[in-house]
Amino acid sequence: PYPFYAQMRESAPVFRGERAGLWHVFLYDDVQRVLSDYEAFSSHQPREEQSVTGQLFAASLINTDPPRHRQLRSLVSQAFTPRAVEALGPRIEEITGELLDQVVPAGAADLVEALAYPLPVIVIAELMGIPAEDRDRFKKWSDAVVQAAGPERVREGGSDPAPAPNHGEMVGYFLAMIEQRRRDPGPDLISALLAAEIDGQQLTVPELIGFCALLLVAGNETTTNLIGNAVLAFSGATGNSGDSGNPGVMERLRAEPDLLPQAIEEVLRYRSPVHAMYRTAIADVELGGQRIPVGDSLVAWIGSANHDALHFERPEEFDVDRGHIRHLAFGQGVHFCLGAPLARLEARIALQAVLARLPGLAVAPDARLERMESPIIFGVKQLPVIWQS
Ligand code: HEM
Image 1: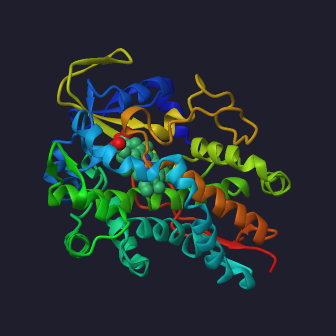
Image 2: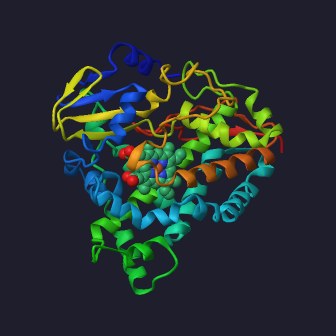
Image 3: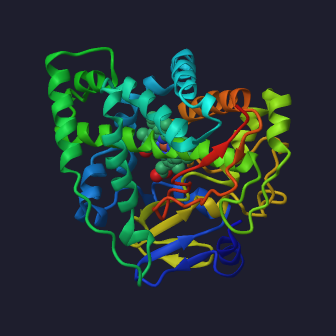
């Protein structure tokens, strides 16, 4: 479904963009190396710090290199181990049930609004100990962050730069939450981060805000899009041109629910919610026959790597019977997605409920599927569906 990527893998797999010092990387092996070789490719984004969004995340896990990265990550990794996440299962099922109760009798809904968006937000808000009722505000803030993500890096030349987002309201909100937790700690992530120390030092306020913003955004739109992209792929709908899909999949998954985890992995490969991540070269590196000088930036195109024919047979086919799928949708190496077990569990519970409770589910015939406004996040804004009620 992505002819541009196929063309680039074929003709210019490591491509120097129009803007000086910006490289685009399209092949699986190269993307894997750029994401994981932190001695050559740093996650620290010096230029991003000039932007408001960059400043917000500059002190966070995702933009930090080892050894600081390891220390920061260890502060939150306990909350996201497969075992810790498994324990959230009953609550995730309960929230899913309540959300679906509100729409089942209607026989039609926007599945993003009804389930795919609120579910991950409520879960992450509860983990962080912030009121889930504020979720409409989180949505606004995370949309602004996602739209601004990497405008100067990923969007090339001619395109208009995105208007500078104003994150003041979000920062003020988190500051208030942090202060409240300082006074009245609870069994939540923010309280745990406030109590944490690295080498006898507490986290700074920008680090705390960076963590909150990262978790709220990372845990949000990505999982929403995984659920939406799965429904699109399972129903054989074309979310974008040239998409084959597979109309029989929905029935198969209803008959064989054990296939669902594997089908979700195939969605992650075939319609990856995150299409790109960036790095900065901190050594002179040779990649795909090109010499990348220190200081240049790279865009690792995960969305392309996951369709590389050198790694996947019939990559353009959505095939739930693929065996072990080594996709790069959650990244690779030390920055491998912290929330992967949670995202997988939320998607499994949500999709299981959708298959069981919405018989005859199909994308509404008159639906206009509009892509999210982001160069790197891949999903639809709304997903109007119908079913037999
Ligand atoms: C990192 C994708 C869900 C939290 C990443 C990275 C990717 C990714 C590609 C690597 C970034 C890099 O290498 O620079 C996804 C996808 C998701 C998802 C596709 C859903 C389908 C979540 C959830 C959470 C989360 C639910 C948290 C609740 C994080 C964090 C990092 C991260 C904190 C940074 C880890 C680090 O730098 O060590 N994610 N993510 N993600 N993700 Fe996710």
